[in-house]
Image 1 (cartoon, helix red, strand yellow):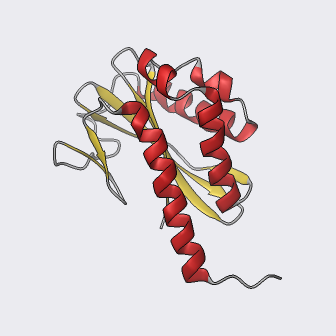
Image 2 (tube, helix red, strand yellow; image 1 turned 180 degrees about the horizontal axis):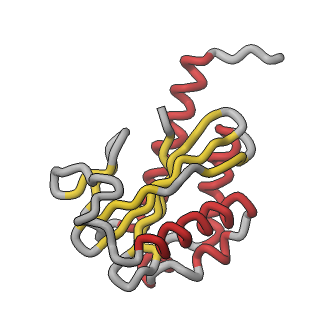
Length: 161
C-alpha cells in the first residue's frame, strides 16, 4: 500500500476543491450566495435545512431532481444535467467544464459510491438541495440550487470534513 503524507494530501485536496468551487461558482455570479468552507450564507444568515417555513412547495420534486443530478454526475451524463440549467448557467458551465470539475473530484476522492438523503433549504427566490455523497476515499457535499422557475441555477461540490 502506498504511503501518503496525509497533511499534504489533505492540503492538496483543499486546494483542488477550492479551484473546483471557484470554477463552478463563477457560473452563478449573480446569486446572492457566498461560499464559505462549511456553509452557504445568504445575506449573513446560514440556511436552515428542511425548515417548514423556507422550503418550496415543490420540495419533494426538487429533492428527486437533485438526486437525479448526482446520479447523472456519477454516470458521466453531463449533457443530461445541463439540459436542466437556466440560461446563465448553460452559458457559463457547459458539459465539458462540468466534466472537468467532476473528474477533479473523482481523481481526489476516488469512485463515487453512494448518496445520502437530500436536505432542502430556501433563500429569497432560490431553493437548494444538499446531498452528502460517499466516494472511495472520502465524502463531498453536492449542492444543487434551483431558481424560481425550478431550473438549476447553481451547482457546487464541497468537501466534507
